Length: 236
Ligand SMILES: CSCCC(=O)C(=O)COP(=O)(O)O
Ligand SMILES: [Mg+2]
Image (cartoon, rainbow, N blue to C red; front, side, top):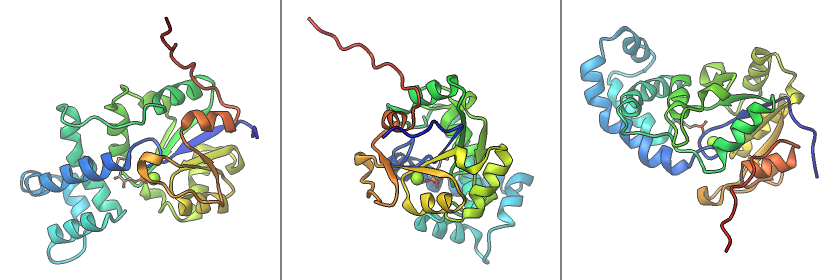
């Protein structure tokens, strides 16, 4: 079934554009290993000190480590991780993973005039680093907006209403892409359309409440979006 083309596509990162394994097995351990050295060197920097002021408890490093262990989607941790990853991206130790189908579709959709935006629990600077230093080059120019948990959590409908208002686009004209059913539920409650990315390599559990797509070309087929022409297959 071909659905109307959305005016805007709002995409999640982990599990949608990017392998969960890259976030959990590369990004998170990188930040955990660098935490003490980073805080020793930069704990007095005003930006870092402002983040630490939001970390509760007598032992802030222990709180940060507990949050890391629990994969807590809390703004101070996400802000700090973004600052720690910056050095890794800038010196070439990190390259933002994107599934092979993602970059060409994003470029084709932006070229066709679809407004693209990101909504992730990762901080906005971390989002820009991942897409700016991605395995497919710098993709930041295709995006008109980046949103993180400073607008609210991803399971709260109010977050999606706030994003739609900021973009100036009616919620019904925005298609939200995510692997997580609860995030799609929240987006739907705010009036957005939604599609679950069910990436087999990530072991995503399909949710019958939502439209599903295996990859971005499948999203394109479902929503009358352009898809890049497949590279020619060699024959002889
Ligand atoms: C922006 S890259 C790091 C991703 C991250 O820290 C994270 O928590 C992923 O959350 P998402 O909302 O993209 O599933
Ligand atoms: Mg996700």
